[in-house]
Length: 463
Ligand code: ATP
Ligand code: MG
Ligand code: MG
Image 1 (cartoon, rainbow, N blue to C red):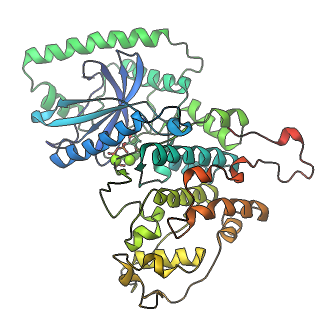
Image 2: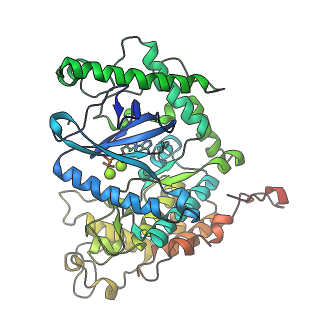
């Protein structure tokens, strides 16, 4: 993957764009690796995303950059502007064999909701309220202000922000672990030896000296900055165990490994009001996003979060994101997918058939007139609008699912179901918009259930 056209190999202390001093890898995806870097000009920590350099990746990066610029240029006074990741800068450079990388610089963010779900199975209801509200704010900003459809809303693409202190600890640890083990292990995915021989030793000695000089200059700036940090809760003086540097291991890095962040998540999960008020979430990953009036693809969304209009192949709009949001919120509360299509090779139906069947089981018959024009309508339905391949359905409402799977008390299940149903309307013109959902009373409900006489102070104002 680090071949020509692929990822660019990065080593601790590499300096990009004459200012970004790389400190460790934060993650990777199909298109790019992402690195924690200190911006020696602005004196802040950043995350730099270095996409692969093959022509198709360059084009994909351009589209992503375009969208990110629209997001950055939206009205910052919109309440949801803070719930969408913001790009800070962009730059390009020629990597191995003069291949072009279009890089993006972001603020550094924390773990995503999938990590939290894996750890806690289900999330505390008040935490879900805080997350849902901010997710909807972010969507309102994208839809109303930027005229952008995200198209891939799912737990992985919603992240919890780091607090200032958490970020500093993280950076300090990354830096210290380099200094403590004197022979710095390279952060690249290829072996350190390979990196050195291929990309460093292969360079003319003048160039090598130049790189060393630049690194040293910037390292001094980083050291100066770090030495002034007043960090109460010092990170452990050892390499974090699950922080391997292998680019091919997606779970190579999780902030959860850090005690100071981990305990913050415990507090969120415990419903600690102080922690909940500090908690900010952001929507990330605009690699698949498109404009309301200019779509890039008909086949959008990750399977479990895919809306019926997309499955059947009809027109879609911003309301597709609301469908995904409802699936996501259900999952946070229950720990299970709302719709989980299953079809094996031995079945005489496929995932689309099963997906639509499961949707109908939960939401009732699908009004055929809305979907008849869909490209895949005739693959899934017969002429009378009945499912072609799946005949036996077992209806179960969202409310029942919330009681059975999420073990919610009846009244909680009813309220949450009332909140979710408008986002799950079949008719995309009737489906609630993000701004409309924000008025829902469920977001303002609080944990006073169970106490027979709710006291005033039990009522919390969620942020
Ligand atoms: P995908 O295959 O999902 O399209 P991608 O190659 O486009 O991935 P991203 O999803 O943008 O790359 O980033 C890869 C990983 O890097 C993320 O899953 C996340 O773990 C980490 N990451 C990305 N941006 C940031 C950030 N701003 N702060 C911290 N970590 C980040
Ligand atoms: Mg991603
Ligand atoms: Mg992407």
